[in-house]
Amino acid sequence: MHLVTFLYVATTARLAELRREAERGDSPVPTAVIIAGLVAAGIAVTTLVMTKAKAWMDGIPTK
Image (tube, rainbow, N blue to C red; front, side, top):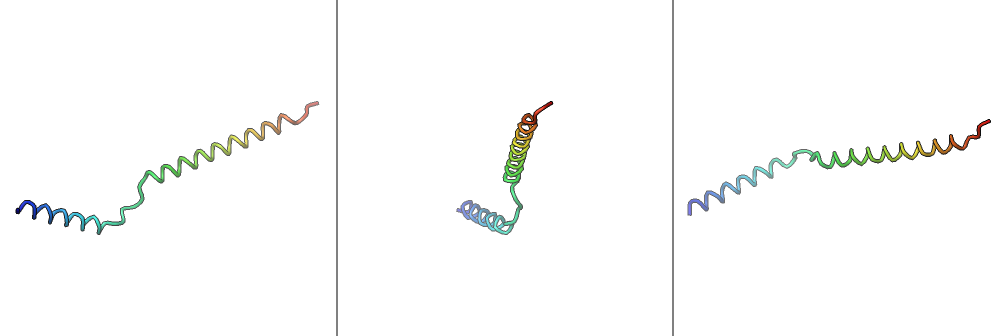
């Protein structure tokens, strides 16, 4: 019975400790996902601009 009491007290103490340390900062995973999304958007915009510029340059008549 003493073992059950010890485990209960240890678990309760650990849960109380975890509740006190609520602010641990942001996980790096969402930040990495946001950065990857921004990189993909930047590549897409750059590709679009390059395609439009090439089409515009190809449309200029030569002498």
